Image (cartoon, rainbow, N blue to C red; front, top):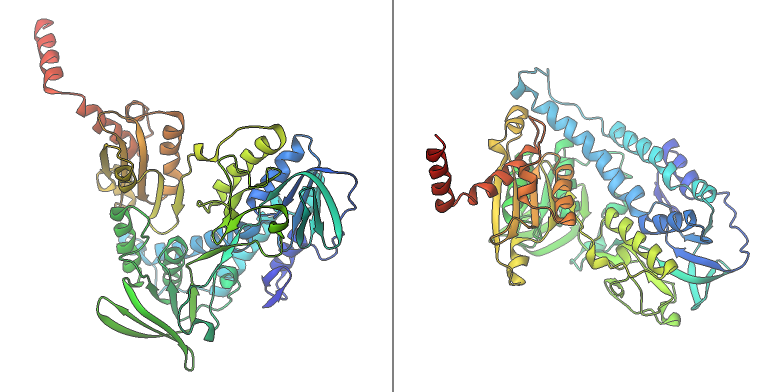
Amino acid sequence: MAENNVGPLLRDDEYDQQLANRVHPADWRNPTPSGRYHLVVIGAGTAGLVTAAGAAALGAKVALIERSLMGGDCLNVGCVPSKGLISAARIAAAVRGAGDFGVACDGPVQVDFSNVMARMRKLRAQISKNDSAERFRKLGVDVYFGHARFLDSSRVDVEGTTLQFKRAVVATGARAAAPPIPGLDSVEYLTNENLFSLTKLPRRFAVIGAGPIGCEMAQCFAQLGSKVTLLETEHGILPREDRDAAQVVQHSITRDGVQVLCCARDLKISHQGGIQVSVQSHGRTYHISVDQLLVAVGRAPNLEGLNLEAVGVEYHRKGVVVNDFLQTTNPRIYAAGDVCSPYQFTHAADFMARIVIQNALFRGRKKASKLVIPWCTYTSPEIAHVGLYEKQAEERGMDIDTYVQEFREVDRAILAGETDGFVKAHVRKGTDKIVGATIVAPHAGDLISEMTLAITCGLGLKQIGSTIHPYPTLAEAMRRLGDQYNRTRLTPLVKRLMQTWLKWTQ
């Protein structure tokens, strides 16, 4: 494995070489600037790519600057490789459970981890065409590789070349940041930035942090055959999610063999012939030896070397300070994506970029606070959410009614043998107006879009209940929520009136 200017890649792997040739070509020559750019975009992750492509399509003169790999975390060390790995792990888990469906599989499941990772790298390289330097050059974007540094409010330097701009966008993203754990710096540990360069399955694997990344990878490696321990300082897993939904996921990952040690205290790491983890959980001390340790907690914005002080752009440890229009404290400079957003998701970065294009180039007044942003954790089952949680509604003084449909009562879930989970919707009290929803189920990330559309367009449970859904599907659970709401409208008075009408018309 080689650490170089394009990140941790396998030195002689054909797919990683293909990836690098597309998103950071070794023979790339930066263009010579000619005149002032309408927009200079720093960072070629999702936010930067969408901003650059969208602005260029509208006729703007655009420069895009990237110091490492185009595609950012999502393509290279995030969404794409992780979901490729998870897909293989789910297949392994499905084969192990085939007997429940009357399908015989002789012998134990054999996982060829080297081929699993090769498949992931192949698919990542295939997808990288969309984020390639050559594609963006053909879109009319001037692509520069190198470190960007603001000179003043109208100029930025890239490796000695000065670019003039009318507006600029900081879209440099964020990176993994290790927490202050005693002894952590004494061992070689993994983050999402080098996890996907593994070629050998660790026999014993520990994960620190039971957030989305930690839970996804803990379950994934357990399904692939590792003995996994998941450590979390708070109670349970996925502490930001709906507690009922998180418990469903915790039961599932425990069933897959993950040892969950929550309420972790006095965590220490040491190197004694390998990686040693010492931790207290619920009054008991554990001493665990592992082959690999994944740290999946903490993020830090990528702001080093940008010289933001020189242009009056305020920032703090969580990122660049922006207003609701994604404008920084320098009105000529905007920011989008993980570098400034509490919602560190690819799709959030995408839609923030669309706001930046309108506001920076066309004096728009689009607000980031108006975005309805769903998210999903890709465990088995998945857990997806949009809008407010019950606790958030309470903190805002909002009275709500909550409707729940268990999948154990949905025919498609019963037939598929996947009955764990539910759909939960919160509505303003006395109405059907949806203010938040959580789904825990297979394909929850796909199912949540119906609730997201409803919130975005002001639709309620009444409309969902009156919409025909194919039978049998998991989505029928949401129609049943509508049925639940409609039944609440059948008050004793309404029922008596209907009965009177039916007697009169008999």
